[in-house]
Image 1 (cartoon, rainbow, N blue to C red):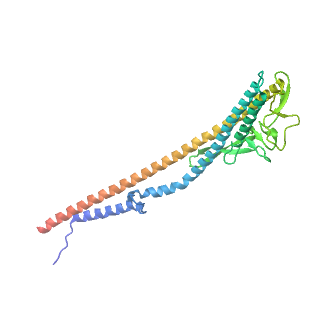
Image 2: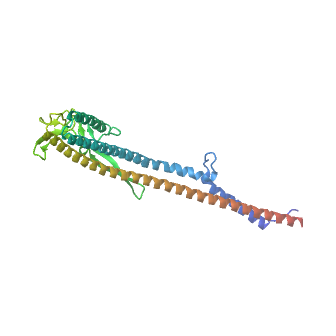
Image 3: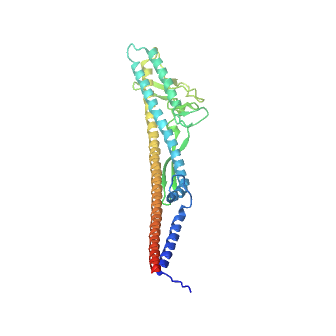
Length: 317
């Protein structure tokens, strides 16, 4: 005759061990996707989170790129205006020197002509990405251009793009279409402090629509009168005033665009920080769960072993 004796301790230990194994399996299921080499299985949740967040980072990258291009356009225009203003101021100084007794006006005019050439080169090279606010080519006109100025983020994670418009007529220095559209190519008529009338322009850009008849380019020789030079100096005063105003307009737009660049970078940095913290949190939680499951499994295995040892002792009796 045979008998079956159920050891309650062994039965309970086996049941608990089976439950622990099931719990451990449930915790480990999110790690089913194999990570790359040298990556712990517990960290597999990182890959799913990273993949999910990548598409969301693409709009930020596009926004930042557009903002950086806008900043480069405004920076280039601002630098070109600064350099051009310095050259015009030096030309005016040369004209003042030409009023001195015994001044070689032909030599001074040669210097002025060279500075005009430098001035035109500065304006021509003040473009970025095919966009030159300081020059209008033949057949063109000043235009209103739109730039990405800033970006704001909503509570739902959506982005709002804010644009700023700039009228390039406020910064045009040379126009090869209509001379009157450019600060350096238009004619300025008036009277000098001494009462002498004048009507001068600084650069002749061979515009399709030149200045009105009677307007003359600023140039001197030994036959140029003192009153004429006074009229040229007064013209350059007005040119400089308009150039300073153009610089102020560009600087305002530049500040708006640069502020937006800082905001975009901050938004992107905050997003990356949030993703990093989310990944770290998920990894820590997953690791804790797996560790707890493993410890529980080890404890239940130890309990089962102890129950089996007691059972063996009873059988020997």
